[in-house]
Image 1 (tube, one colour):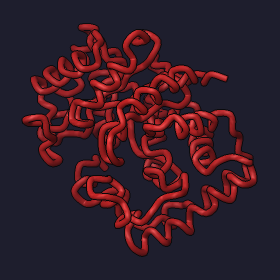
Image 2 (cartoon, rainbow, N blue to C red):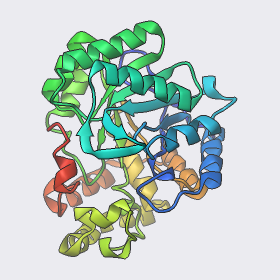
Image 3 (cartoon, rainbow, N blue to C red):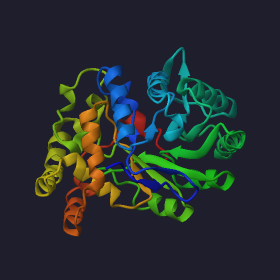
Length: 331
C-alpha cells in the first residue's frame, strides 16, 4: 500500500509520511554504489515515499547530481529538499565553516537547481545557523527566492528557539529539520512546543540513531576510516556498551510485534505527532522497504511508555556529535 501524506506544518507543504535521507548514498557511511542508490530512489517512488532530502555539501555536490539523475522524468511528482550554508572551495567542504551571506545563498541555489535538473526547490533549508549573518538577512533572501519561484518553502536545520522566531517573523518557516529519535530527544522541552505554536513541521533526521536503534551495529573502532560512526561518541568505548543495553527494549518490542527494531523506532516517532516526518537514510532497497513498512505499525500505550522510559535522555551515554560538530548546532 503506498504511503499516505502528511501536512508538514500549516503553511501548505504536503509530503509523504516517511521520507528518504539521501546523504549516505554519497558520503559518511562507506563506499558509494550509485546503481543501487538509484534503484533505491526508484523503489521509494514506487512505494509512495516521495520526499527526498539532500544538500549541496553532500559529496559535495555529488548527492544532488545523483538525485537529479534518479528523479528525471518524475520531478513534478516528488518533493525535493536541499540545503545551503557550508563553505565549499575547490569541490571540498572547508571544515565546519559556514556561508550564508545573501550572495552565497543565491549562488548555492543556482548550483543546486542545475545539479538537480529542476527549475525550483520544494524545500530549502539553511543547513546550520551562521552567527556571522543576521537571521533576518537569511530569511529575507530566501523569501525573495520564493517570490521568484526558485524556492517554494523555507526551512531551517538544527536552529534554536530565538533564530526560529527571528526567521519566521520575516518569512514563514515551513519546517525545521533536526535530529529526533528514541535516543535523541533534546527537542521535546522547548522546540517542539514552539514549532506547534508557529505551525512549523518537524523533519526528523537520524530517526534510527545512525543505525544504532536498528541493531546489528559495531563498535566505533570496527568501522573503516571515513565512516561517520567511527567518530560518533555513542559508538565508542563504554558508551557503546551502555547504549546497547538501553536499546534492548526496541528489540524486545519488535519481537512482540513481529516487526523489526527499525520499524519500532520509526513507528514511535510517527506516533509523536502528525506534524513530524522522519527521513531515515539508506542506500539499499531492502532497508528502504523495511523502513516504509513502519507506517502501518501501531504501538500501544504500554509499549510507548516502556520505550520512553528505557531510552530517556539520562539513559543514553555520550554526546550525539563530536565537539566540533556540536559547536555548529544552535542550542
